[in-house]
Image (cartoon, rainbow, N blue to C red; front, side):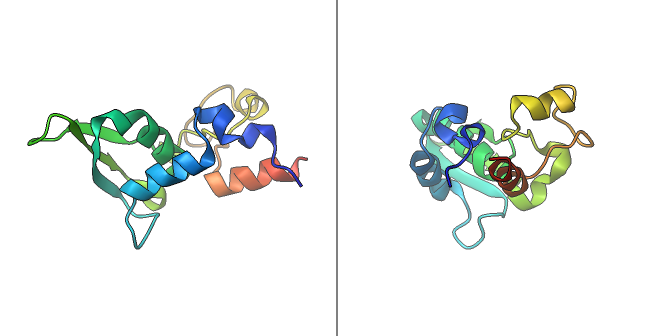
Amino acid sequence: MTASVAYDPKRLTGYRLEELAAAFDRVRDARDWKAPIQAVIPAQERPLVEKAVLWFTDTVPEFLAHPEASDRLVVRAPGYRLGGAETRNGHLRGPADQADAGGRHAAGTGVESAPTSAARHLSLR
């Protein structure tokens, strides 16, 4: 079975799944991938890390200037477990799902967690 094109990471983020996974592995908690994220990254990795955190946790990361190194950023995000439906962006929702919700991405609009949404997209094939 092939995955739906609606779930294609390259199409949705501009990065291959392997690239997203490697970037996420660099910032996630090594013992608990669902835990809050706080890490220091090279500034040039921001676009990839931003997409990786969004892809795996469905939450938007915050980037702050590192106090001691101008070429580094501190990245923070609530993580998958603490994200909750009210902070999820619904990045895996396809155009039909967005139309059903009136294009809104907020609590109570049918936004699903990443695993649920992915499974739903696969079941539509």
